[in-house]
Image 1 (cartoon, rainbow, N blue to C red):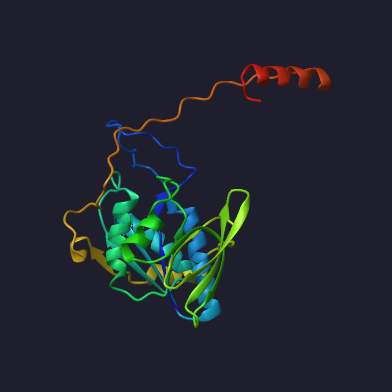
Image 2: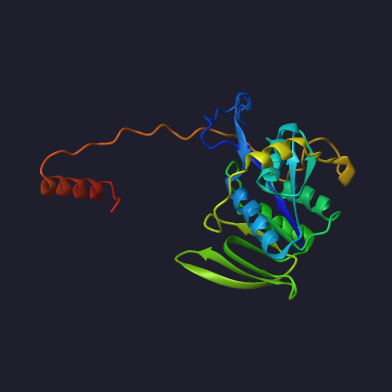
Length: 259
């Protein structure tokens, strides 16, 4: 099987984020970056499929020079090849623009299935996978927690999360599959894999190579402003006997219309 995984490099969820002076992006100096956590499930599932059915896993990303680190992480986990689409800072990028760029790149390489995370933890809008499928003219299934592929039949049995239940879907291949937490448990890269990934040559394409102008990924939305969430107010502590304390708590919740 030819398996492709689209990955994104995002700020570490433990990084303290600051809004830049213009109020339309974040201060990127000093930030630690990691592979988008949901994309790790996609990488792991790609490796599982390769181990079961054979073939090759190719990871692809679009972004500045530092985005190569995300590709090397995937290579260290066990991916075979990587492709970097060079683009400058992504503050103004939306998921649709990123999907358009990725779709143009994927039209140049073979694939039987495309995997990615259900959403990126930075913009958090979960639009990339459906948009990518639309640009490529493929079926897609999102929020996937179970996947069985039959390469000979050219189809996949997919389990996806819906509110309070599971949905079972059969889709033809190729298709875009967006992974949810619970699909698998991503493996840790072995030392040997890390060393091999450091030496791996990663081909680089530019947006001009894909027939796009400029150095930044295209965007169809505009960020008008960003602001941090308001500071949390201090809570109220109730002390005393359990029955008395519970009664006071219920009364307070009812007064705030929380119950």
